[in-house]
Length: 139
Image (cartoon, rainbow, N blue to C red; front, side, top):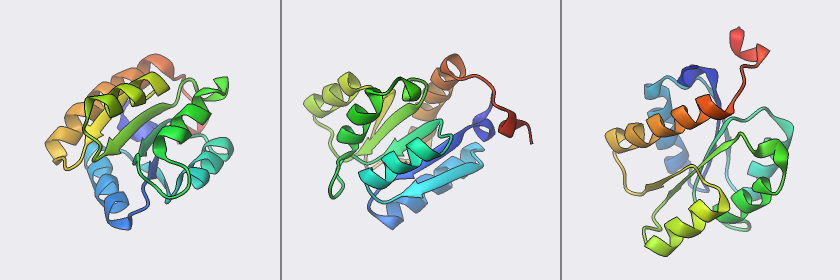
C-alpha cells in the first residue's frame, strides 16, 4: 500500500505547522487528511474516524501529544495506528518517553521535506506491516 492509501490526522495547535505538515504529506502522495488543534479533538477524531497515521505535536494546550498517545495505546482498537511525534523537544529523555508511550517515529523541529520523507518512509513500512486493506481505500 502507498501513502495515498492511508488516512492521516495532523494535530498541532499552530495552523502554520498543520499547513506545513499537510504540504509535506501531499508531496509524498498522502490524499486523505484531517486536522485537529488539540489533543482532545485528536482523540475524538481517532474514535470516530478510520485514522491510520497521527502526526502530532508534543506541546499543545490541554492534553499533550504524549498524553494522547498514552491514552490511545490503552485501547487495542488503536494498536495499528502509527503515531509520529513532531516536536521541538529534542532531548533524549523526551524521545525515550515518546517511544515508550508507543510512537512509531519522532521528528524534531525544525525539519526539512527531506528529513520528513526519510522518517515517513519508515512509518509507511510500519503501516504496511500493521494494517489490513480497507474497502474505502479502493475508491
